[in-house]
Image (cartoon, rainbow, N blue to C red):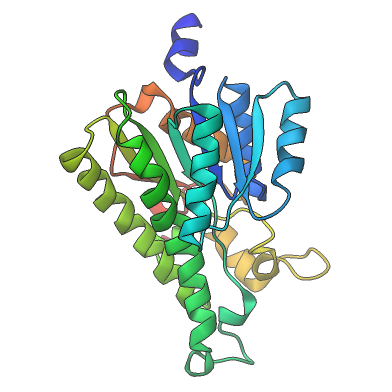
Length: 274
């Protein structure tokens, strides 16, 4: 057991989580904290509240304001974190999501989707959810002697484009591609010990997609039924099930893993339907 504890331990690591106050980011933050890491919860709102909840669980956590679509604001956040923590070892980018106005429906066809709504989804998931935080926090991390780990969040829609959400699918595909590009770029140009990977969650009942999977009474929509039919595990995921893979990617146990996009999907991406 001591062997495993040392392999997956996050003791002494300083971890920044953008979108740290969200349902996914805050849950993974708790897992990181229980594994010994110090946590910087970075979000537009509720960052102090989430940090305080973690502190009550004996986790070393602090809250910071960030606007991931505003580079100067990201730089301010980064400066504050480095001033407090001195060093950043792990960056988890947990900002993302879709919006109903960028979704095709019986009322809104693809031809009528407002470009500005499409752009909002791409900006949120690609620029705010990956590129800008990697530019700012990554600039500090490339100087770490022992490197570090950057974890982006892609999606099943990057593997298999999903109906109704063209902007989200396109953005998450770009996140996967960018993750692989950045892994190579950092290793060849800056620091071979700085790794960049992504996880690709399958279908989890979160605030962003619940309206697509369940109706107002909590019953499965036709889309929800189809998804479960094509998920060998036969259920939706729960956010706790994202913690293990993130601890692995943040820890030294994955020190030879970079440029990968790892599905956490109950088998959805592997199932052909027959």
